[in-house]
Image (cartoon, rainbow, N blue to C red; front, top):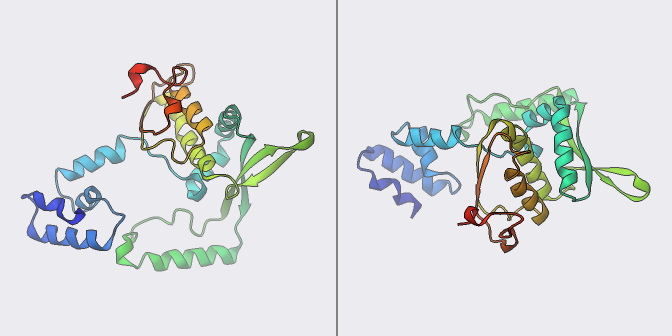
Length: 238
């Protein structure tokens, strides 16, 4: 029972226990550790900080304005990502980020909606920056597929498979991690990614010419096709 997990700690006050239990009953998608960190309960704050700061998080690029803005400004990274997508052989020739000016009426509406959301205590975003709401520009991800007569056709992010979009979010992090290093945790790596993408991803971690920073990947999988010598060594499988 999720509402009883925190009750085993005798160091927590009765008030905190009751408040946490009530929150867990109302919110099904919140972590106990996160709530304890918000309440500044030690040693949970330190433990939460380890997960928050020491590990690399994959982010959804299609809904993150700041990431799309960064990709738009970094053409070299876009070219690296395009190379990865081509090597995966999933029919994508290259990838781009397009920018356009947001109409004034739309910006005003976005700002008004976000300001109203900030007044709702349960959302806990009163001190959050706008993070893209009311911005001057908006960005579109474009994936180019090569068709007949070698002509390229652009597809928006919502036309691509979810696995391709997830893979793109990984590549944004991996481009820097393969240089500076990092630790990646993935549960069921084969769940949302195409088998070819999973294979390319794992082989990249094992390639010192690509993974110059010694980034590490720890993942679980149900795909026995990954248990081959050309993908993983025997000592890498547990």
